[in-house]
Image 1 (cartoon, helix red, strand yellow):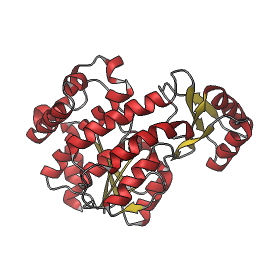
Image 2 (spheres, one colour):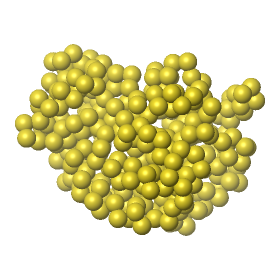
Image 3 (cartoon, one colour):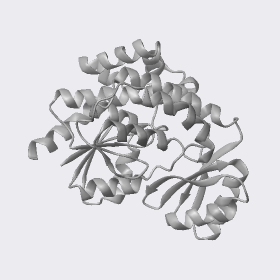
Image 4 (cartoon, helix red, strand yellow):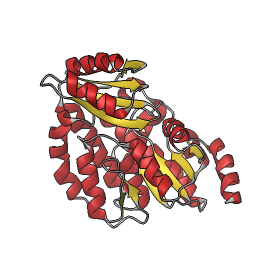
Length: 309
């Protein structure tokens, strides 16, 4: 059984998807559709500049567009998943792939999502850090002990001994030190523009919620295993509400992968730029087959695997 996984922010790079667009008309058409919803997006994706691409309100529609271009290449070859999931922003790509809402609507709303998340906290007031080599419960304990009335909490529970925390600058620094005292191997500050997936994002959630609930939706063709609770969403209402809650809630990625495994998934394809999720899956579900598609050359391995299934 196959699951498609869609990456989130941080996987972007200038030039991503250009080879797919050159090689496959369905990929080229996807970027054209993205440009109609967000003029100039493909020029930014293919040509940069990088500092503009990495602005949150640009990064989010860019990764979505590249991911759906890659998805449509697989779809055109008859490769379809039994389940889909995405990391943070990637859950929007997963919903597009499942048919919950239209790609053009997704491009527009994730651009606003990025803007709302950026505007929720003044630049320089929030931070994120990756805590490595410490159990998630102990990371949560470190955050609670370090908060001192500020916001700091687990934001991405990625598995394989990696938990990202988010909150105010001072509280994240205190929690990082406390985590190291509790046995963490490292605490690495992340170069992000806002503290995603924590209570500081509530203003963004409140702005985005009515727009998500106003989207034209249909029930997904395949279940979407959601970040907020690692449960399969089989109807449009549940899928949308999961996206609303996701803005200020932690991404429970390890639980998502374990849920997919429990449903019988044995093959994962990371659809879009980078291979971050592939690396995490290999550590969480060790006997799974894992592939990623970001360029035409990646298709040979996927085709070979599908032929033997």
